[in-house]
Image (cartoon, rainbow, N blue to C red; front, top):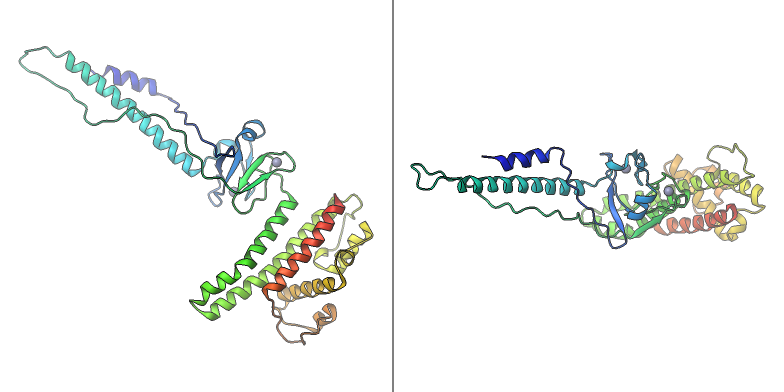
Length: 335
Ligand SMILES: [Zn+2]
Ligand SMILES: [Zn+2]
């Protein structure tokens, strides 16, 4: 009675329903980090995925997690595929049952004592598999400087998904971009928080601005550390946190290039850079309270010992500008 259904079910053992995935208009398709803590969404170029990527290892651009290529489906793709495969199989079973019922009914003896009729209710059309659509394009497109694979992200990325390469340039640019957008967003944040509490608003904005100063110096130091070690004449051992100190770091560059920070900035700019670096030092070590050491090192005559420094948005912007100038010089000279 259920010949067709049984045959269909037998055929379905180990059935593979393949569902195509669409690329966006730039040829990128969606991927997602399989690490549950991260789940960072990114896109890779379809051609590079086919030609460059290895089945055994793909990297998350955000956290660097390494996993096999078949684990990078997005949540959206998995849900969509499960739904479509389910409907497809359901459709097949339903059709088989309907056919069986029709067969059964046609074989009924006419005019018999008992008449039986079998019908399968409902209408499940044979499912046509639709490609899974792509998310809209991401603005930031990146090409790995090492393996040339193309990928696309929102916000920051640190690792190439294909070869795992961590680009010092990319990391530095990401941090500086984040700092710049934090500074630019402060007026909006201040305005929004003012509605709730003026005190809270001022405290939050102050913390944000000071964090920009701290982060800029850390980004600069990390960049210098790596760029310095890339140079063929660099010393293998340099003092700890050398590039957080302008005098120590400046001397290291001088040994390599015969020029340094003082040659790359005007005298006034260098003085300001020194003040901002020293203020960063205070924020890090004395909660911003001025001490004699600060006054001696910064030549800042605006404060007396015991005062608390004030950092404004314009100071953070100024520091970012100097750091960009210096890192451009370093980049050009190292490469
Ligand atoms: Zn990740
Ligand atoms: Zn790469």
